[in-house]
Length: 428
Figure 1: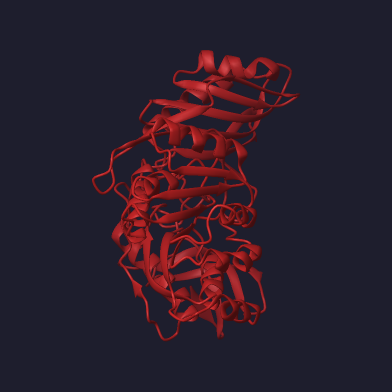
Figure 2 (figure 1 turned 60 degrees about the horizontal axis):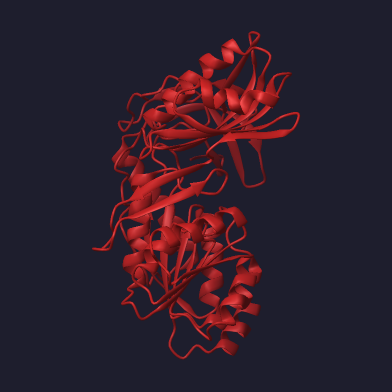
């Protein structure tokens, strides 16, 4: 970020301390989006990017900055957001938890397909464009994902009648296999799912959406989760197409943080909204009296139930419903919970959730987010409901990018009744 004539200018692929010549791409009322055209004086922070596509592919933004400096930048950016929310402070912002790996970590990826030189290529869009950049190997991907990608590209060269428009790939390092979903065009795509599984090593399941939707093989992946706080390790299965975190090492830190801050002693009741296949529900269930998981993704909820049975957690119940309807269903079984956990998608929780959340009388809320702007909006809503922001733990789930994962702990203010919280929320 820099300034020209008093207006803020955002310039990607630069580093603090750079002096650069830029080209304005989009000018808004309060800011300008620009592209760097020449580095006239390089920042002492700069390092050589490890990928030849850096600056062309839009997947990474920070490869030219040392990893520990990336963490400082993310922490400062988060601090700036929080300063606007709580100018007087009153909460603790903990240091960013670094990722165990700053590359080779992604187990889930989506590629776009296109034509180049008469070939069907796979890659990522350039930053804020629909210009496709071919990717033959990505340094952020787990080696198994790159191995499957290499074999897939070779297979596509041999099957020239098939055009792949989109590809989703997810792997399980624990099982050493992957699953794929294609959007494809071409005369041969009706048998493509079967051919992919039989002809590409380590692909155990595939879905093809072309002339019609077909599938072949096993579309679920199994993961073994190390123990958290002296509890038994967990083994879960995740259905392809349901949400799962991209960084398994950092996901373990996320689960541990949520369990630690929940401070469960086997007597508490917990609700986990946006639970998916049980990523947070199951480790919470190991230490709670009762846990309810809620998610709109019905296949994920069915998988969560199966995961609870496989891990002998009979105190976990799951509802396939919206978050607000899930709260209503839980209220039919209990008049209150001790802890509410929210892990919504990037867009954050819907306003309707905050209208009904006070009915649970949770003394503590743990909010997980990967998008600081929507996090700040929802924290403001929770504060209006009578909750005090106690502390925030950022985790670097996405090294080499500007994205950050955050766990926020909020405590119910003493003396804040439901009616008062409702009035305060309506005024927010």
